[in-house]
Image (cartoon, rainbow, N blue to C red):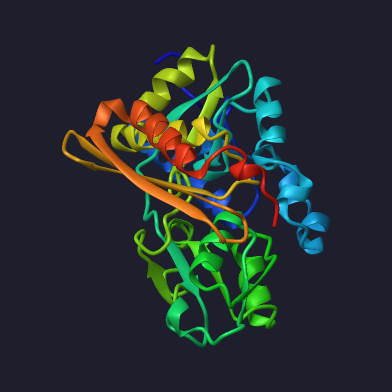
Length: 318
């Protein structure tokens, strides 16, 4: 590796400023430090505010679909990288569009954390224990649809913001329960927060949930060589299948889609689900095959589910 990062010429890591985003950036830094025997001051964490972090939007509790798409959490960071202001960007992969802007590439993933959703509720142990008509908060269309498919008697309200904001709203009584990702809570050492983890059989997670992705400029050979040292191959194989499933469905923040790929040696099991926003209809399925055929499996499963759902399934509005 040439041009090793130093305190005078640090490697600049771009990230959002939430506690979870910073924890993910710090994990990336720690892995690079260990891989190349570098000191902490050879890196600079650069916090970049994105449209999705705009306080006025969070406080307004407007649904994400009314504000924009997944680019809400990435555009300003990617612009900074294209401008040369940062060297790499650290992302929660479930926030990432399936296509990157020209000049950028996203093919480095850290080892995946717990993929499950966490049920957060001070008064009740599980979804089944919630009383009829209970108010549950979530900003995720997927979680909303899955919840209403299972418990149509519940009232679901918009619940935006980072982990700390959502927990504050819960404590203020805006809702009696909410969901977060187990991965994020684990990364912030907040393992006491979940009331219970929801198994994938009960609530299939978002595409790429629990995975950290690192984006770079496509012509940056130094970063290509460095990032190759910390890339987790199994996570990459799993995400290739899940993101191919999402891409075939043309998925966005406006479409309730779930998927989970799991490996058993050289074999992959891929589960997927598509839902209407109000949970009134859903289609789920699974497919198995060779692990390295993941993208093909993802596309096939997506086509199978859309064939079952029929044309215009995602055009339906609640």
